[in-house]
Amino acid sequence: TVLGDVYAGGRQSTVDSTEINISGGEITGDVYGGGTYDAAVATVTNDTKINISGGTINGDVYGAGMNDQVGGNTSIVMTGDTARVNGTLYGGSNNSAAAIAGTVGGMKSIDFGTADAAYTGSVNLADFTEVNINNGTTTIESLTNAAEGTNVTVELNGAEILSRPNLHTIPCLASMESQPLELFVKGSQGDKI
Image 1: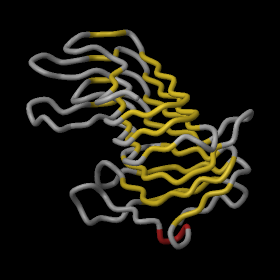
Image 2 (image 1 turned 90 degrees about the horizontal axis):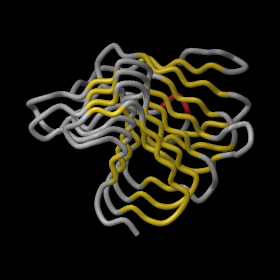
Image 3 (image 1 turned 60 degrees about the vertical axis):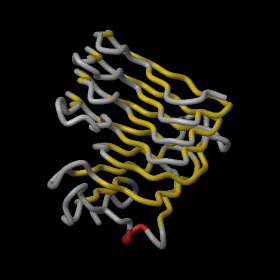
């Protein structure tokens, strides 16, 4: 068991890229693909990646860090049927400090399953630009975008997506605003809903 948070990046420092692999156990806090800001900016020059194949995370998961700057893309990949995130999966940064807002220069993506490994489970999602359902069955309990006017593309690659109570009623609201989010679903139909 890890008591507290896990950071892949540095504290008030610059790293080239990061990758975290979580395959079991329990993390009581949050997981960050980037670093943490205190009195100076924490930066990931290129990409961050978080691979979750098992275990329980009782907090949230952030593709970026705590108010940090990511120059490239953030990526989260979930596989297996024992991986659980009890909080929300975020593509970007935890912007809890008003002094410096975290940014991501590229795409913020999440993949459920790979060609070799399925994912089965329920998730809450926020602040992604791309959601890929590749293998298995993913139940999306909630989906929130980071800003008004942000589009999210959901790619169904021969897998299933479920929501409460159905796909057309996923709660898609902008954070801080009551504006609807445009949700694009790509798959055999390629329909926008």
